[in-house]
View (cartoon, rainbow, N blue to C red):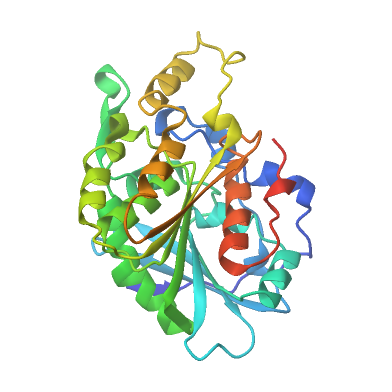
Length: 333
């Protein structure tokens, strides 16, 4: 079931490009070692809370059948008549953080290129990144974290979250906006990128373009590089999809010389990440190129580490899908 949130607030025009990289820096992609202060920043007001010349925004909230989880959807619908088959739709995970990448100029550019219905799938709070919720929803298997009495199982909710997207969120989006079911793209970063791959591999997601950025391939000892990939490759049978796999150049060629290896959290994080080699995303793109029906592009952002790859990858995916200029280069390392 869903409910409409209260009327949005207004804020002054502009999101300074110089602040973009700071505003949307992603947390380190491991639940127990994330930069929690940055992750839990309040998103403040965004384009969803003010009037745009080319987009109208609305918001609704969807709850899981058991009532334990809620997702806030901010929906940007192009002004003006829709094409005969409906607008294409561009879906974004970590919707609260994704909203911060958008400003009025970007909306104007989208409107003059290939207008998209913008679907920001976030959580029903003001956190830019909800660490615990995304760890649960975006990961394909449960694993453990912590030690001793603090040991707990986390993650593993991706299949249930995909069902919520397909059977709860998507019908409500379609009710509110004229969308073309054959032109749907899904973008996600870090754990979100891992979920995008899970959606592709499942064969149950109704998207035609999958844009995983910096996917956390190390999750659960690299399990997504094993059976899920092998089963997908063996069973895709020519099903068509476009895959845009993205990574920060500094992620593929990491420099840990300035890391405090005496810090247990740092050491734990690096040990987990080592379950997938730095070149795993590139190697995956090469394997997926061999799968019948897939159109695969690999894009690497020179000098960018994990956090700045969030806005860069989102801007590049909009370029690739909607035909706007490529603004990914404006994100600084």
